[in-house]
Amino acid sequence: VKRVRKRHFQSARENGVPIVGLTSYDALSAAIFDEAGIDFLLVGDSAGQVVLGYDSTVPVTVEELIPLTRAVANAARRAFVIADMPFGSYELGPDQALQTAFRFMKETGAQAVKLEGGVRSAEQIRRIVSAGIPVMAHIGFTPQSEHQIGGHVVQGRGENADAVLADAKAVEDAGAFAVVLEMMPSDVAKRVTESVSIPTISVGAGPHTNGQLMVWTDFAGLQGGRYARFVKKYADLRTLLGDAVRTFRADVESGAYPAPEHEYE
Ligand code: KIV
Ligand code: NA
Image (cartoon, rainbow, N blue to C red; front, side):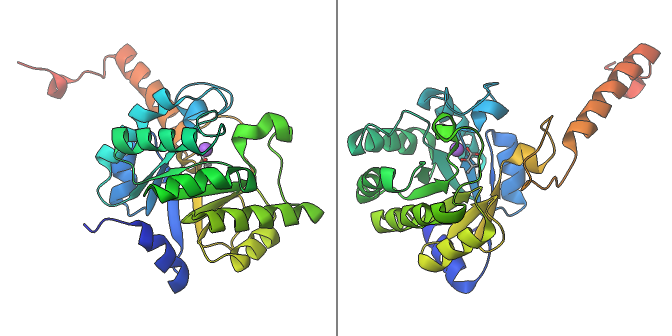
């Protein structure tokens, strides 16, 4: 299999071929998505909620993400693997950002890193890229600053669209190879996509971008509770697994499991 490389993102944009990504946090899901032809796997700090049981991405550390990122990189044969830099691991400045990026590159096998912020993170992006590490930027709603933003709020509405456009320009100028646009009106994402030349990847930013990304446990219906408007459940794994557990219990109670074919002589 031919590995997806950084240049694939730019040529996909230029050829009008959508780029499709999912998050992953473990070897098994990574192998399944890789074999099914996903272009990139983001080992997101959404692992905070999905894997680690936190209620936000704020507490997530580099130490927690490194083994998860390594597991995904070990399993991926074709997909481009991107390591998400957690809150507190790059904001102090370009030196801290590059140190963190080095750790992910040297200790995990990821091919790129991602960090949040536009104008405010441009110097960090520039420094990491100049050291030879591809950076995916992330603007619009940035979950690591949810306490500053005041919750999960759609960004770029009305006159705030200009700030989103300035963020997009800043990350492009700093050398990001692609930019995630999270939770913004579709027409703003369209303007961003038209105003930059790097690929834009939508997470709740509508159809007028160069690609789409979803948190895999949302995409597969594994999570409980309320889903964001932009999520489409492509499977209902939560119901499937819940039913399987209930059947297992019932089988053990009735003696249907284990049956003779499950026993050793
Ligand atoms: O951590 C994550 O899953 C992300 C994507 C939703 C963009 O950053
Ligand atoms: Na993230």
